[in-house]
Length: 118
Image (tube, rainbow, N blue to C red; front, top):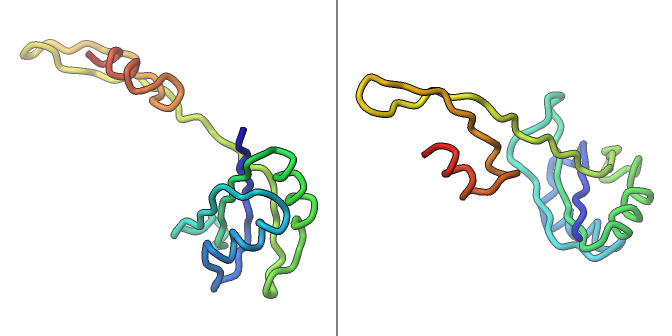
């Protein structure tokens, strides 16, 4: 089971390869990603996926509060927010409309999503 770690306040010049190398010393890294966008406070952030929860916990305990190239970074497990489901009006035949419940794609899968719409 993979576990994803979130790292906030990344140095400006850090590349995803540097993020990978930093975390690889603390466990088996499966993936590293730094999005182009920034947090609400204007800081860079990134995600690292570990092969096991034990490796992720080890990295969190060792790197949280660590100063990396002059930036004090915070590291913790990523928190996933589920996308909210919503009601939507769909046109059927001509002028008739009906309201349907559209569930979250990630939780129910694409097949169930299509079934709910059609």
